[in-house]
Each structure stands twice: as C-alpha cells, then as structure tokens.
Image (cartoon, rainbow, N blue to C red; front, side, top):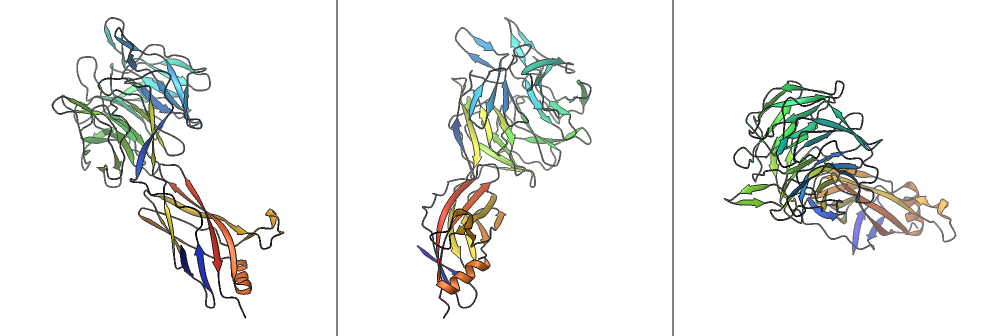
Length: 436
C-alpha cells in the first residue's frame, strides 16, 4: 500500500509500510489469564507494595470437610506473572472478609474479618505486614468488629475502613487508621449500611465506595471526603449492574475498574462483567470493557505498576478459585498516513510516539553513523484516532532532493493508559523528485 505525504515544494513523497499491521481490538480494555495463587482464596485481601508486587492474604476455601480459613499470604510478581509464598510469614489469625490497604512507609494494614474454630468469630483486630521482613505485627484494634468491610488509603497517609458487618448487623459506621499512632478513630457514618462493597481512592483525594449489599445487592455508590470526614452520594451515578462483593482498583487515567460480584434474580447470579467509573463525570460505563474469563464474587483486585490490574481468587457459586486474571487497556492499533500526519487508530486513551527513524546513508556505514531522518514526535489523546505530525529532518530533505529516495525504519509505539505498550516497526521507503 502506498500513501502520499505532502512535503515542501519540489518534493513528491511516498511512504510504504512493509511491517504487518496488528489487528484492532474489540474494546477499550480486556482481561487475560495469568499465573495462579498457591491456594484458592475467597474473601481474601490484596494490596500493592512499593516494589510493584501485590500482597494477597487470608480468605477461605472448601477443601472438603468444610471451610478452611486462611492465615497464609503470598506475593504476586508482575515481572514474572507468578505468585510465591517464599519468605512470607502468616498473619496472627486466619481472616475471611478482612480489609487491606497500603501505608506510606510501604507496609500494609490488614484489619477485621472473621474466623471459625467451630464458632464464627468476628474480628476487630488489626496487623501490619512489613515487606522487608515478610512478617505481620499486631497494631491496635478497630472500634468495632468488621467483616466484609471496605478500605482505601487516603492522601494524608491514613486509611479509611467503612461498613461491613459485626457478625449480626450491617454497619454504616466508619473509622480511619492513623499509622503515626497505630490506632483507629471514628468518622461520620455512610448514608446507609453497606457490606461487601469495594473502596478505591480517586485522584482528587476522595474515596469511591461502590456496590455491596444491604438486604439486597447494590448498584449505588458514594464518596468519602477526607477533608471533612464525611460521605455523600450527591451527584454520584450508579453502576449498570448491582454488584455484591465486586473487586475494584484504580486505573492510571484516574478511572476505577469494578469487576465481578453477584446479584439476585431471584436466585444469586455470579458476574464476569466489568465497568469503569469516571471521576470527571461521576458516572459508570461498561462500553468497550471486556468480561473476565470466569464469574468471580469476593475476588480481590490491585493495581500493577505498569497500569494493569490484577484480579485474583473469588467464587462462582461452585468453586473457590486460585486462578487470577489481569485487566489491561487495549494496545492494538493500525496506521495510516495523510498529508504530514500519521493517523493511529486506537481502542483506548493513551500516547503514540515515533522513534528510531534513522537509516544508513551508504552501504558501508556503521550503526553509529546512522543519521536521523524523521524527528521523534508524539501525541496523546482518546480513541478512535490519534494524529501525530511527522517532521523530516534537514538531512532527509537534502537527501531526497539529491537522490530522490531515502529508506527508513521507524518504531511506532502506542502506550494505553491502564495497559501495556505495543510497538510496530514500519519500514518506510520515501521517494521524491530528484533535484536537477
């Protein structure tokens, strides 16, 4: 295929793309499988560490003969897409339905939950995981026991813990953990009792609390304002689907991924679908968001340093899972050239860059003598099309006028927010009118 690129007077240029095009994706984000945990975990906790790994701890599974409550923990390594419990100690007590959140010093708070030693015990206790030692250390208790509550880090270093149940009653109350004192302090209540919800910090310092249950699965959401220690649902839209025990995590562009959970119809139904919350509009949308490979309620989610999101464990009504999946924004793209613009068709918000647009000027030239032929531009924006202005270097223009042709390879990279970068190498044969 030959495209025409307009150049200064006297030059007629054609660009031929030799490398194969990547097929376009079908949505703005999708899930793919990754390594499995060492143990099946339902109603566990997860939190990102500063080194990019993710702590996953507690939960329970049915191993025959009843439920097994877990005190064990393991780490997910995004560099290898694997989990490992090597060198990781156990919590002081098994915890099902606890909460977890990262602290400013890199440690992780784990609080509440329940365990069963023949009798179900709801927990107010809390402990902190130290990634340097792999050990958990007890801190002060919460004001009340909380099972299937939600937590999120606040911009001032504290941690919000809200809702849940105390073993008999769903709670609307909330409290914050202060790492400076290792203690909890009560704040104002939520608008209504809410258990099995998800909580995620927003870029403006608010915390989104979404879904859960209060006698029935909830599609509603509310936000916590750390400046006033208050909750509000004013102006906050609801999800497209009611979700009991969804998994949720922030995306790099400030949106929030909410995945899975369950709802009643009238029997309990388990969800593989997902949607995103956009803080700028306070609305949810599932447009372009793919579904997980399996329905999961009570799974855990955590952001990864490259913008992807880990979702692990959970339950589909039959099986408690050790499996995990990763959500990433679509990175497939296609190319076309119009005038002096490179048009890149994309499926997600992100950035396109053009680099390594150099060539040998003669057959004997070494790699070090390669010369720049296209400047390295970039452009950011939203789908469907990102336009990048192309600029020939002075050397390229001179060679076109002198010889009428230049061959150049360019690396075109699309890096979606919330996904992995994708690069195509395009061989461009540039032809112009030879100067007479």
